[in-house]
Image 1: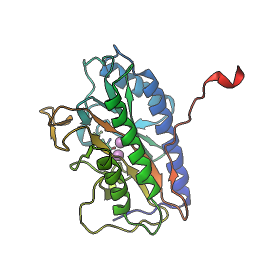
Image 2 (image 1 turned 180 degrees about the horizontal axis):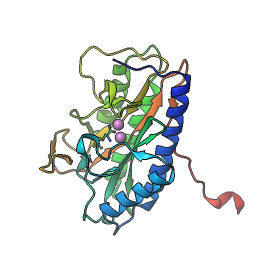
Image 3 (image 1 turned 60 degrees about the horizontal axis):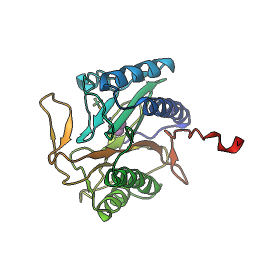
Image 4 (image 1 turned 90 degrees about the vertical axis):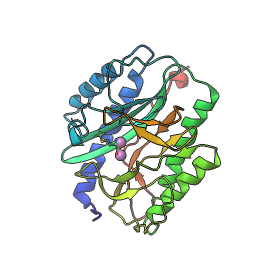
Length: 258
Ligand code: MF3
Ligand code: CO
Ligand code: CO
């Protein structure tokens, strides 16, 4: 059952989304070569707390960390630990916060230092695919229109989309109906209506789409060991254009002052 949010719930979703976005921006700025994933998770925990919010992931199905940190071949649900981020690694950060009863869910993938051009293209195409999907998040369309836009952009650029994990409705719970696949699955697809809030989240692999879960029960990696990227926004379906609830403010350089 898809939950349609009312005016007041939408206002709360906006605030939860803003907190998630702010935390993600701060954590992204913290990632650097030499940091352990544990240190990044602890930094995230302190930032979440500073907004009087709670991690929506900690304890969710017994997930043991505050955010999901997935490095290189790790696709999603990476566990923080002693692993050190190295120069050239890509680090996916997925933040879910509970704030005033609602959840904001958002992810990005950043480079530690510098990377080669193929990896940069993976990040660019994945982020572009997210926005192609969001552009289809319009009342009257179906969920599959989002899926199709993402899949065609990704595959048209020579990359592949993960099948086993999908986007989702989000609200008082992390995962609500409907599922939002990043590929056309041929199943009946719900019609989008104003007041739906969706987490749209392409997971894109450099090589094969195949993934596996490690023995820790959480960490999802690519079967071929090649890098994977993940970008995610929480989006509100409106009467007109989609509203991104997890926009990060861009901090502009001081070039204007010069
Ligand atoms: N980050 C996932 C999503 O965006 C959910 C993570 S659940 C957790 O849907 F338990 F792994 F944290
Ligand atoms: Co997420
Ligand atoms: Co999500």
